[in-house]
Image 1 (spheres, helix red, strand yellow):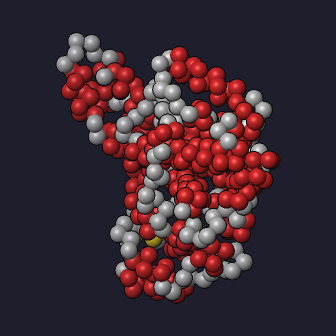
Image 2 (cartoon, one colour; image 1 turned 30 degrees about the horizontal axis):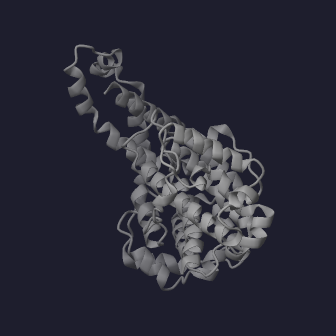
Length: 397
């Protein structure tokens, strides 16, 4: 019981750290705490159960004694209540417009062909966009920045439509996605604070060109927008013969973090599909012993060592590629001869593949350690997962 409480408090501190800064930063940073604060609310609702069980114990921890004195409530709880008020003020700005109001606002909305590549190519302003907006059931329109809300929602729908195209990794589509998701092509040296500080990560994404208008919605409206765009309608199939990646770290695990757990599940499924795809295509091209000749230098030995340790510890005998790290997939696919002889046929642009893996890396690392994630992370996860899965399914078809 005490371990569960400690884990909950640790999770709360991780979320409330950036939330505390929201009062002193520009309102655009508010998005970093929208989803996590909603998850925290569910955790805090469990407080009476914690207290009931603890009060039955002879040992009464110091923090509980402080909690019982209203003026000495835990600092994290006071922070949470302050953050809730800030989030409530932000959410109050949003409204669910009437159909006639939506139509009127769309008449004022203008697409710039030079900048709005996704909207120009994939969105129909006069028909499908209006129907999509009418299907929203949660407040989504920022009363202070109406055109920004409309543009953000429209671009989300444009991204969803773009991923229905034939080749999701060709350079034309990749260039269009960069307008909203940012340019991640250069090799990134990852700042350590972005993995523990949601505000730092938000600013890091913005520096890469991520358009935060795509995610500046209250959590229910953002989730509905993703669903309408078809970005999270169906998680990838789990290919269980290739095993699951490492499970999330137990020290910070928190059942209440639904968003993190959902993202973790998607990544597990995506990784098993990538393993299956790489294994089958490399075996088809080079035979069952391809691992010895076609892996980057030293990687075969690393996989072998990890497998041996797992087997000695009583683990299941998975295929060798089941012991790959997340960063290994890009190394195998983009290795010069492998790319030329196998993978260029499927992915078209090697730069786009590397860019996609880099967009997934921060959320992969945080979900594997059960850390809170933001709506920016969710969007990158759903977009890039859709791209990889579409290539793999096309090969199966």
